[in-house]
Image 1 (cartoon, rainbow, N blue to C red):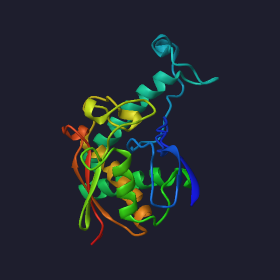
Image 2: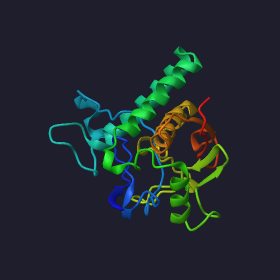
Image 3: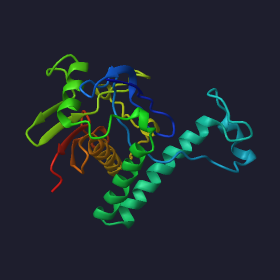
Length: 228
């Protein structure tokens, strides 16, 4: 038996932290869990001219000597949309997806080790713990069928947002920007793959079955425990 404190914090620089202080013996997991997120690096608009200064006022606060936070976030969302549009136009699909999935993996890997599930914990322990956390199989966001695991994003317990209400769990693009390419969700495929790789101790193959940014009503993944 050992102590593990985990927190799920989805911050503006899009790192995921698993939330909920628990005692565990590798058979329990996540007394608090929400979802996962994909990411684009946080950006800031520099050298704003006096002509647009009035448009950059904010009630959210302003970094000392820097650009107002809300302006930076709007700029970042526009930047993300432009970047995805350019990737769709300039790269073949395989190269684009490989880059975005790699970004998702590094997003997961960038979280502190103590805030991740134990390495090589085992898929059954992971599934059982999440199922218990959500009150049983009828309400669980995860289920195993042989060598396949179905896994859903649910919500962020810190902010209270839920995928069922139309919120993307990536804080950069929760409700926007309009017209964002569905390619963005390749990042989540990489993230989920890295999560299950850690739990299982070996690579997995992940399919995205549905996502909000691709016109779906939820964000659902199919994880193949045998990568080949």
